[in-house]
Image (cartoon, rainbow, N blue to C red; front, side):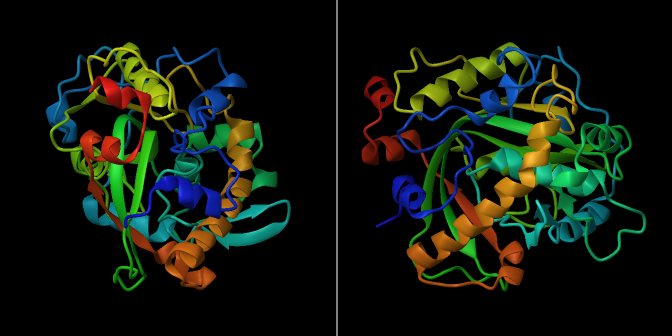
Length: 342
């Protein structure tokens, strides 16, 4: 039988907030956790709008908010950068360096997105063999501001909210799937990193591969094809975000939002347009600790769920494939209050 998230969560040692925790405990949203110490609430200008045809999405946007201005890179160069960034390691309080569990999907995605953004921001020229380690003691507000103002490679943060329901098949470094059923996940929102690839906004998701993919293709891994996902303004984004955050926290979310799926693009090291990298500097400095805990949690998933032990050096090379699932499929398995109104 496919494995649904509560068994996985109980089996892991992870302590960081997930991307809209997908058990039924109603834990606080990670975006809100970050915002509490930075700016007031979740109503800031977090979303960006642009012509949908320009970025490969399947919805229309109203153009009322800016898109981060990113220097373009050729696709081949972007894929090279992805393979290089995969080798990022973290150091926390002198512990490490440790590699990244890029094949995680919903747990601590905001931290993982920040780590990938750091790799690009800190990219030297020439690149060398691997990114500079992400070391908590070096991530002062001044250093974070310096990286944001003068990144080696321009990236933006991409933030999507909706009925994120997916089967995840984990792949060994050689591309063969782990024996056993896929993991089944549902969660309220997700964060990633976007680049300007030859004039088109694409998402680099190292859990999938080294090359950036069109936004629409990335979203389709988590959201059923029958649901349009639009690039929207902040009001529309947070209307959708609030609904799914409540629904997937086993609360009654109220009426369905005008858009079931929405996403935003925000400047590097931010999740909303009213944030600055300085606002999130303390959060960014905590990322190495979270990623080291997540590495151990991922190893626990591999051992307890699949009965395998993967060497630490190979875990960053693991990838995933995703197959989106429908709300009907979720509600057939989970007794969530919102399902009664569908």
